[in-house]
Image (cartoon, rainbow, N blue to C red):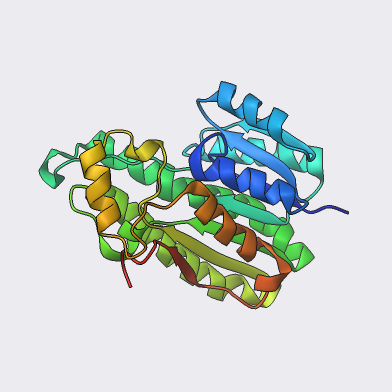
Length: 241
């Protein structure tokens, strides 16, 4: 029987590339989106696997539980969870409002917690499963003018390491992929000059692609990574070594 993977934030960028890669790897897919239904439907048509899209606000724990129950009805079980959905914002620390803070934390960090909590009981019962969290280089080093984003991604790294210790005896691995500067919509506000400067700061002298990150997720989702847990795999082209 084919394995099933949930991917949050699947309609664009890293999530979209990951969906295509895992489809090629032979997974059935439960694809989570929130606002971009058109892109999600478009992705669904491109995939040569059994897949279904689900609209869900991952910052809402009830919505997450309801969506997970729908997925279980459709696919019976889940083998891999990719917590990819996230949002970013650049602001001076003193300009970050209470709403800004709550939005970034609830989407990036709480959403990862809610979906992980939803899938774990069945994974623990089966004594197998993989959780793969998408962190960020700024969660490792901190990013100026992105304190709330950095805090959320650092929280994901801490959650990854702690949860890996807790569920390892149940045969479940928990890892994080930490992208560097990746060419996605999150860079849409950057000028060409800014992007060139970013490229120059990378040892490999180029920005990363969603496919670079998807390849790392694919490895962690595979049997080849069965003895890897609690780790942060940095996909950053050498911008931080």
